[in-house]
Length: 185
Image 1 (tube, rainbow, N blue to C red):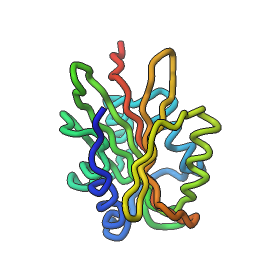
Image 2: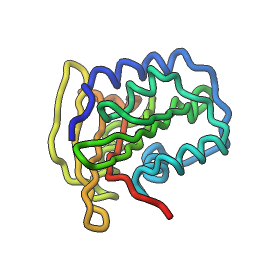
Image 3: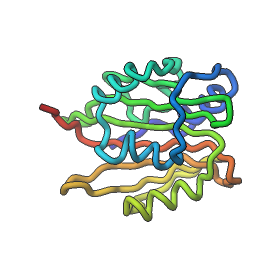
């Protein structure tokens, strides 16, 4: 599975965190990892369900160029992104979903971007609570992309963490999962 270059995704997160106005959202005291698990990991990416959920919550749309910067897939056939939280006492959070074709398989992705969180703790939660198996790493000048595999019901799902090379506890993290599209009845 071919992923987008690391630089395109992380170029937009600092822009988004500094330019976006506060978004309305119900108070949520869950940790960033719990939010990623609930919205992306627990049932795998579900494009249609997530779009409906975001509309129901009336989340503000994320700018298209920023959304595309977070999507981990090349040439998505559909994508949407929302500002989940920014400003106030909670740091920036965005949720992005996409559909694409990889070879002959239809896949979906679900990604969340966070600012001001602990990157090392986020990675530890992924490996210990979801038993994610490391499968590679790609490092740039200031960021690292780590690849993991999670096996669910006999199917492999690809998880990617985009992290700073030198985490300081108030980091920008992008977490994504890509899985084969599930047809819901």
